[in-house]
Every structure is written in structure tokens, then in C-alpha cells.
Amino acid sequence: GFNLEIDVCEVDKNRQDKLEQDECNNLIVPNFLNLPLSRKYDWIFMNPPFNKGQFNKHIVKAYKHLEAGGRLVAIMPRGAKQSDLLRGFVIHDLMDECHNNKVQQLEKGSFKASGTNIDCDMIFIQKNSI
Image (cartoon, rainbow, N blue to C red):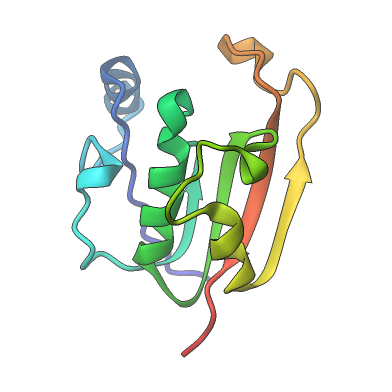
């Protein structure tokens, strides 16, 4: 079997309340950007906020939380890999320095039921082993 410890970060108060109602007791910090870098993970799954390019900050921070050989799976707006929003430490540079990386287009309207109609991609990044 597996020994899994799942940590949850959720900035939206309504979603925090829903997690508490569902008896999720693993909400460790409301804002992922405030999570101490001392926390390291083998896997990170995330759906970061898209507005104002925040997804870039979240994905870069998540990468810093990965153990060597760790994997990151994240949702991001379609085309963001080439977007002008990604100045500085850009996702495609991050992906170039790792291995086993890919971008998969999600089906149009994948998140329509949750109130958004933004076309999205899912990225898979594996941090190099030391």
C-alpha cells in the first residue's frame, strides 16, 4: 500500500468552508504562495488562479517545493506557455530544464460546469533528480 499525506491550500473562503464541511482537515495554509519552502513534496496537483498571470507564480513556486524527481501537474490557460504574461522565470524555460515534461490540451469547455469557459492545458513537469 501507499502512505499518503495530502496537504490542501485554498485561498477562496467559500471553497475553504466547503472543504471544512467535507471534513477535510488537511487545509494547511489558505494561500499557497505563503507556504514555507521547507515543505517538500513528491507530487503536486494544482489548479492555480489564472487572473493577472497568477498561475505562473504558483507553478514556479510549486516547482520549488518538489523533491528531486518530484512531479507537478497543473492546469493553466491555453497558450500561456507562449504568453507575454510569462516574463522573468517562464514556464517554458522551467520545462526545458526538467525531463518527462509535456503539455496536454484539455477538451474545450472542460470547466464550463464550474462557471468558466477558458480553454485550458494541463502541464506535467518532473524535476530532475540530483
